[in-house]
Image 1: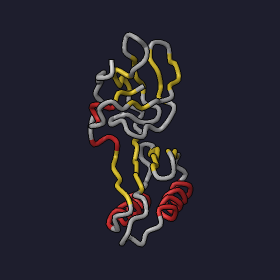
Image 2: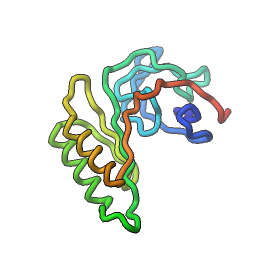
Image 3: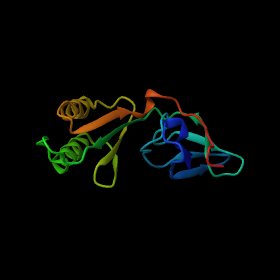
Length: 148
């Protein structure tokens, strides 16, 4: 688990999939809310073996994530169309993505991947107030354990 207090989400936890690598673990999913954590990064857990305590190896991958806004009065954008367009771009680029619910998307961006078309599409949708997007590495990972 990742305690998301450091991400501005006190009391919230994110479950991440991890593969064991001896005395540490490799992230086996694309994190949705955690800052400073990406697919294939290597981490160690706290003494209880429950919470990610530290990133000990960076994979070079980055996470680009988007929260698509619900349909609102005065906005002509269909959220399903936004998600479909971003999913299609990611597929064409050959990059991995995961979706949480109907509107939260996380994209795995490997080192050196040219994702300009995806970023440009997100910027265009954001200018129409259809979504909010960000890179997960705009802030570093920080261990917090507010829930225990």
